[in-house]
Length: 428
Image (cartoon, rainbow, N blue to C red; front, top):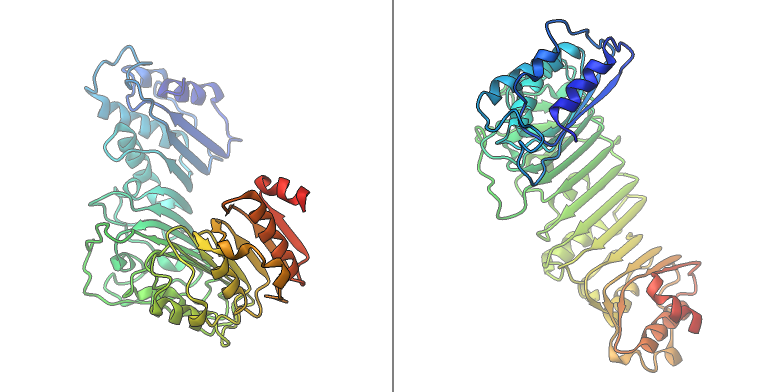
């Protein structure tokens, strides 16, 4: 049983535990039993070395009072939660790193997290959890270096955050680009937002159709500065995002763009830069469109300076017509969309520097018969092929397609396959 009784007994059992550095509090109940805090009395020995606190809520499908015979209702529960939170803070006054998992915004667990978070807000170095857990405080510590926050809640404002101290920033379910106005160490109306030390930035915007209503004044246009940024990951970035105009430097080495619209907007920000890795993943159904081909031709064209480049076509996407493709700098192609085998082969012929090919959800055309007799070379650059889920009317056609790849790609020196194709390989 992981209830508040367990946590309190845990704290009591260790008493003067000055050596404790990390603490995990875990509960499956929102209710604090009547009389529980009386076990502490008035004397609590601080765990002065405790710097990291992880709070985990895993509510059970049964009633929250199942393990709590004293409480049959939530009457006075708020007072008990406040008392428990105060005791936790008193016991661990120096917490600077906090992780919150599973605190529901309408539950007692949320009230507990709010109370604890409010107490630690001015000393955070790291925070990871939902935005609702940060809601009680208008400003976070200027010493905050790492922030991971989920915006999956409505009507909650992001606290003011000093951007100049951040080194790691991870935000998911971002509703609007208005969030940028909450960063900065000077005037909140300042249009220049400096992330002087930020090295890793991950942004996942809400998907199209979600509520992207402004959360603060959206009329202020901002200029984002990322002079130390090394890694950038962006998903579903809006076309008018100030992130697209952000000032970066030669420090940027890794960029991963995930797209569901076919526009892959953020790539414009890193166009022409000498980065180590540029990865594009798309789940868009617009991958056969002219705009998608034009965008990817610019990204993977002759002017691309990235050392490692990859394009992943996920579910819902389609392989574009090879006649409209110009990707001479593409090094890795992953196909997880249902695609005819002849379309794949036509595209491979247009990729002179492709080194790695991953194929799944490929279905084989009837023309597979007779192709071995005319197996001409389709690539002399591919070194590795992963052969995933291949669909064919008969098992022997899968084997034939496998043989064709081995014959048509003489440069191949590594071949991986899923377990289901083991029998075909034995036959070969």
